[in-house]
Length: 273
Ligand SMILES: Nc1ncnc2c1ncn2[C@@H]1O[C@H](COP(=O)(O)OP(=O)(O)OP(=O)(O)O)[C@@H](O)[C@H]1O
Ligand SMILES: [Mg+2]
Image 1 (spheres, rainbow, N blue to C red):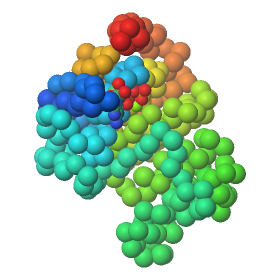
Image 2 (tube, rainbow, N blue to C red):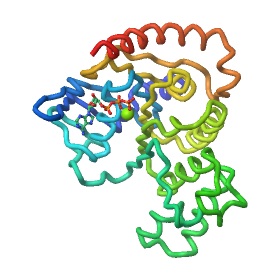
Image 3 (cartoon, rainbow, N blue to C red):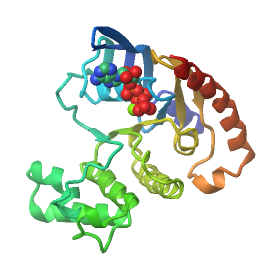
């Protein structure tokens, strides 16, 4: 039985398949090769981070998968179906770096926006929004406008704005990049608690190695431009994880310094271009 479940874990379904992905931009008269021959898979329920220096093409890859940007070469499949640029893929949610709250809507109305668009009946929508607010600790702030919230609270509301639609696949582009260290740790805790429960398939872009180690099952390290996969690292730390306690362990320090070295080489190369 134990063998059977181990085997199932090994052969978990692939939700996102990226094969030979390339992307070039025209900038003035110049052609910029942003991403070159990138191939990877994200399995069902897996938390994978794309880590790399600034300009290594992480957002480009994520935006292509999110169908916000057409690819130049290669193939991307979500749940075995090729994606169509410009057409939303069912089951996929996107969380941006900057909170995307409407300043003229309250927290509850921001979180419920997508459900409103989908035509969900009011009673069901209210229930879903209330549960979302509870889950990220925003009870009491339902009727507040975004301008009155701290950065961390805004990012919690922004996260639930996407999660309330219950996407099974989550694409996240440095969602906590603008937050201070402690608020960021707090958000890691919020996200991990939700993920432990709902086990979304997550592709998370970051240039923060500590963040990638805290959250991920696997880290895909990008090279300096043109972004290519340099190395992939399994993150074997036990779950559930406590980001603060984890940072004090020897195994964290060891893996951190190993990846830091490789990442540092790319920072330096990126600087030179
Ligand atoms: N619309 C565009 N037009 C021209 N060049 C672009 C465009 N978008 C991205 N690029 C270039 O492609 C490269 C990769 O950019 P991308 O934003 O994907 O990097 P990134 O790894 O997400 O960086 P960061 O960590 O700073 O967000 C960069 O050199 C960037 O200048
Ligand atoms: Mg980016």
